[in-house]
Image 1 (cartoon, rainbow, N blue to C red):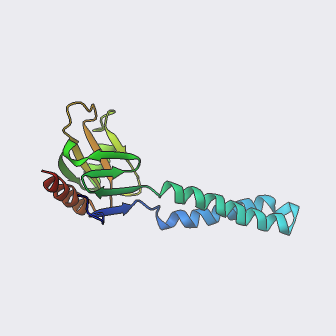
Image 2: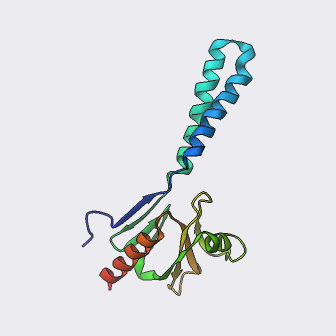
Image 3: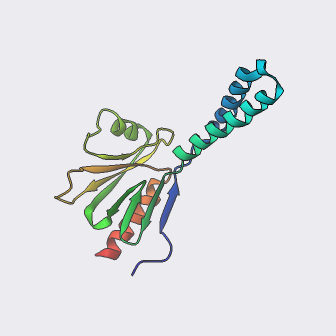
Length: 154
């Protein structure tokens, strides 16, 4: 039986500064269209800001959830029975696992603007993925939710 509410649910939203950048992109489009008059200037401001905001929003719309017996990270759905120990990575260690320690076979749900992460072993012998790297603002809570889900399944 699956619980009705997810014990862990996080949306990896874009940082606030990206919304300011979206507005500045609109200003840039407005300045490009300035020689053509006021109406194109306003259209460039609104249109450029809207397109940049949509792009920032879509990039920041990924979610990490633990629901029932599954971890859902972006578009991946992994049963918690196939997962091993979770390791909480501080910003320095997370940077190392994003760069020189990274394995090309690993599943990376990477957002560079989130400094901390959780590295979870994949214990399924049929899966070539050695581990999951999940950018998260709350790695402790995610590790606890995975542990609780693993305990509930066993």
